[in-house]
Length: 395
Ligand SMILES: [Zn+2]
Image (cartoon, rainbow, N blue to C red; front, side, top):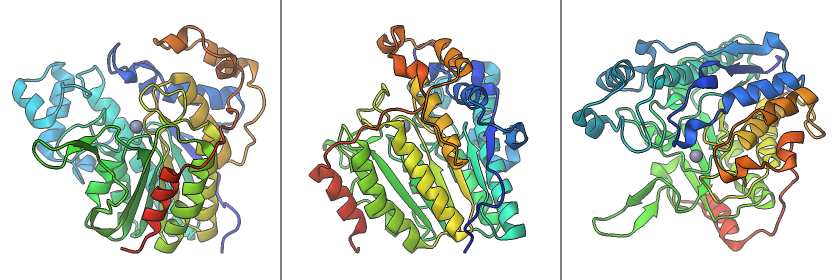
């Protein structure tokens, strides 16, 4: 038993995110990582000795998972700022969700470099001491990425790469918890045949990615309640309007018991912020208290077992709510109380944001003056209980 966290958590970020944009009309036109970093600094929550800039991953390092021809196509797309119809069709680069933009290779490789660094730091610490180390990597979390193509704003799958690095340290049994509003399909599929990697995804039902199960049939969300991907996956497709009380039920009645039974050597939390009520791409209704609570519970579980914990970013398309959420999660990992008013300097960070949507023209006062949301508790609906029950059922 290890009842103390022996080394201070580390925060990994990068300045590449500050001015990089997927294009003016893309949901990732908004700043996110830079907002969170600026907030933790202006709130006084960051000891600079605990900050690391994410390195840009080496090409060879991402070939652990990604196809060389795809990585080369991604590099060429950034260099040329254009792709052929053949590249569009084969690699899904420069189409729909995955535009050509100026930093598309470097930014993706920075996400991968940051999360692989997180895996090395936690893995090395665990090898030396057999104890917990926590790393919060703000830039990573591209859970839809595929080995040989882009998907859903994700050009690489930095999470799969990090889990593969953990494996190299002998951390075989991994629990992956994904609270992004979208199904963590890329990670689930990468480890579908591997009983040592338990993937748990809580996501909005009938939200992207949608799949047609049979030709001409209806579109269905991926990550249905019974989808176990060969055994080691559990999925929680929740209804619109998911509230904090419902999230707590899923975590306490299913996620934590499943993680415990799995007896993991390491825990990964994909902490996407698009399940927050103010997010434009989902219809879930969490407050950031839900994210704080999940991160805190997994931190306690990791500390109790003496195992590594990585927390990544993910989705999140409202810069006010993403920045405030991830800053509060960092505070929670450090056992810092985040309730209370923002400092003047933190408020100035929030007041400087530009959010090109209706809500951004006249942001509500609490987006500017607090980091912690008011809780959004509510009734627990049957559809939510059903998700927990299905996940706990024996196969
Ligand atoms: Zn998402």
